[in-house]
Structures are given as C-alpha cells and as structure tokens.
Amino acid sequence: MSERTWFRSLYSRIALGFVVLLAMLLLAQGLLFFWLTGRFDEASPQGRTSQQTADFIARELSDAMSLNPNLDLEAFVRTEFHDVRRGFSVIMRDGRRAANRPESLPPGFMQRGGGRAGPPPGGGPGGGPGAQRPPEEQRPDAGRPPERPEPAFREPAPEPGGRGQGPEPAARGRGGRRGGPGGQVAPIVVNGTQVGIVAVPPTPPTWVLVDEYAATLTWAGLGLLAVGATVASLVIFRPTHKRLRSLEAAARALAEGRTDVRASEAGGDEVSTLAHEFNRMADDLQQRAAALAASDKARRQLLADVSHELMTPLTAIRGYIETLSMANVPLDPPTRERYLGVVGQETYKLEAIIGDLLDVARLEGGGEKLSMVPVSIEDLFRRIVDRHQPTIQQNRISVTVDVAPDAEEVGGDAQRLEQALQNLASNAIRHMPNGGALTLSAQRDGDRVRIAVEDTGPGISPEHLPHVFDRFYKADASRAGTRILSGSGLGLSIVQTIIKRHGGEVRASNRAEGGAAFEILLPGDKIMAS
Image 1: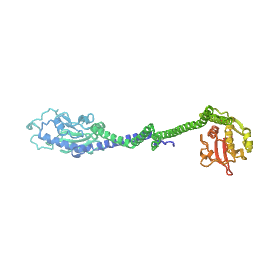
Image 2: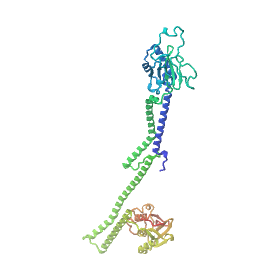
Image 3: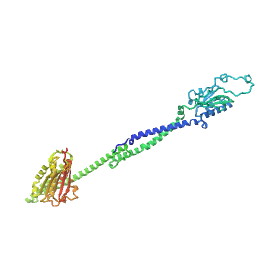
Image 4: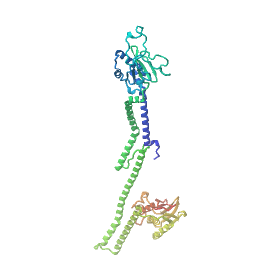
C-alpha cells in the first residue's frame, strides 16, 4: 500500500475538523456579539438612539412631575422604564437620584451625572435642599414683570470636539440637551424650571453587554456547537464509522470460516490501512486453508494409494502361500518352484514400495539433512552405467555420456542426486525396447546446469505428461513394447522431491525424434545449504 499523505490521516482530519469547528464557532459567536451590541442603542423604545432616549425619558419625567409634584422618582423609573435596556440615571436638583439599571452604569456615574456638574447643594439660588422660598409679597422682585426663568444649575461647557460646541445656555428649555465625553444628557423641566437631568452613558461597559446577552450567547453557542458537532460527525466520522462496520462484518465472517470475505480499503487513512492488513491476512489464511485442504486431500489419496499398492503384493503372496500350504493339492516341483518365484517377486516389490515410502517421508518431512558438497556429474553418470550394465548388455542398449567443460560439477548431496538419476535411468531402461539408445548429458544453461536423461522408447502420451510426477501414477499403459513390470509409482515423485530440495526443477517431455526426455535444472553457481 502506498505511503499515506498527512491530510488523508484520520487523526489529521479530526484535528483539522476540530480547529475549523472551533474557528467557525468563535467567528459566529463574535459576529453575533457584535450584532447584538450594535443593536443595543436601538433597544430603547421605538429604536431611539442614546440622545433620543435621554430626551424621551426627560419628557416623560417632566410630564409626570408636572401632574404629580410629589412623584416617587425611584418607583416611577423602575415601573415605567424597566423595559429600557440602555441604562440611564436621573439626577434631581433636590438631591434625589434614580436609575433603571444601576448595575449597568459606569462607576460613579450617578454621582457625576455623565461627567457634568450636578445640582448645587442648595434647593434654590442660595439655600440647601430644604430651603424655603419667601412668599411672593416678600420677594425683592415682587411686582416686577416675570422674567425668563433661570436654570437652577448649569452644566459645564463641553470639551472641544464634543457635541454642541460653542457657548450656549446650559439648558434650552423642554427638549434641550447637551452631549459630552461622559454621555448624553437631557434636562427635566417642570413649569419652565429645570429640576434635574437625565444622563445616558455613551457606551455601556463590555461586562454589561455580556451580562445583558449572556443567555442569548449561551444558547446560540450551544446551538452552534450542536450543529457543528453534527456536521463534523457526518463529514468526518460517518464515513469512518461505515468502513469500521464493514471491517467488523468482514472480521466476523472470517471468524465464521468464510475466507473469501474482504473489507473495503477506500479512504486512504488508518482505517484503510487496517483494512488492507486485514485483507492481506485473509488472503494468507485463504491460501493456507486451500493448502491445508489440498494437503488433506493428498493425504487421503496417499493413504488410499498406499493401501492399494501394498494390498496387491500382499494378496498375491497370501494366495500363493495358501496354495503351497494345501496338503490335498498336489504340486509338481516346477509348479512349486514357479509359485515360490512369484512370492519372491511380490515380496521384493513390497519391500521396494515400503522403501520408497520411507524416502518420500524423510525427504518431504525435512527429517533428513542434505550434505551439500561439489559433486562431479561425470562420476554420477559412470556409477549409473555401472549399476545397469547387465541390463544394458542384455538388451543391447547403447549409452552416450556427454558432459560440457563448464558443467562438470554441481552443488548438492551426492547420494540423493545419484538416487534421482538412477530412478530416471532405470525408468528409461525399463521402457526401452532392445537395441535402444540411452543418452546422459550435462550442459550449462545460464546460471544453472541442465542434466538430461533421454531414451529412444515409445515416449509418454500427452495426456499423461502433466501427471508423471504424481505419487503412484503409472503411465505404463501408454508405453508400447514394454516387457518389464512397472515400479511402485513413487520413483518419479521421489526424483521431483530430491530436486526441489536442491533448489532446482525437473521436467518431462517427448523428443521430436521419438522417446522420452527428462531434464534436471540445478543451481550451478554455488553450493546450496539445506
């Protein structure tokens, strides 16, 4: 599987999704907060600004005090203006103060009056809050025409750049107002006399806004978090969960014995890597299961073949022995001698089968360690010819030995290589008619040595060629002119096992000019370790 890039990693997706979700949540919360604070000034009655709010409240207080001079200021402010979100303070010249939201006003705002001077300590031009005005007839200006009422107290002039620059009266009658850095103010006028002011701070503190919209921001944040978590789960975790469920189902099916099931490897992340490893494990298990099934089948077939091969000579031996042991059956000496000869042949065949089975068990079971040494091929050919010399002379078989100069030696176990070549030569001589020819050759074939055993017999039928190395497989019926009894059917299987233990391979074919050819390919560059 190709190396995984960082952005395909599941952990990277989770981390990136968390960062994006958090950033979007903070951005949405920030936008919502700024939108709410931007509407804070519009939250006053009829969407008025701070100054309009101050004017509106001053007019309401002026009308209420004109109708009821003994108005309970604090109760009136709390009752009538409880729905005004913008905090404000009311400062009367007689010292009374009230606010709709004292907690939302800046520290000392009710004492400063928005940064402006409050009413003088006296209740009039020269007295305190409790001073009584003299009767009309005792005042010095009695009898004179009324003049424009003078405000009970004046506000300081605004700073440069403030609202309403330039000299102007402290109060401009009903509806007059003046701004400044401390906030917006509006006078409270009763019967032509300013009796107090309404002060609205310019911008409420941040904690006031947070306290005001805490519930809204909290619920909005929870809603955004829920939506973001849902989107993240659908985008990030749902596909992963689906693939994990597929992997789980595949693992469960594999546990139930279904080795053909596979998990999806899509995605390119850790889950797909796990699925890839699972599939590879499933492939290996499937191969092992197939090999085990084939081995079991081969074991059963071998047991059946061995039973059959052993039963044939045993049956013959028992039959002839029973015949020889019958006292009421007269046998002449030639007949008795012939029966004993058959028993001897079957005994020899039985011994050969058992010996071949032991060889197969030792070679395939790995119980025998090969002794790998340089082996002279010419010496192997000489020993083969010497062993079969009586049969060769009797059947007038010509033998040709050809060893190339660069193929004189090969690495292997001398005893086992000789056994393999002896089996091939014996098989060739057995099926060769009188006057035939046997060729033993060795040539270089790249980095390997090719050893060939060829005869001039009838060859092997094409339908039998793929099975000649199978155990107990006999192709004698395809051989024309055979005069010698067949072997155990294990000789060529033993040859194949020996050559495989040497890291080589063996092939069977028919020569173009007639006859069978067996080729052995062995490594020629080094001596292999068993």
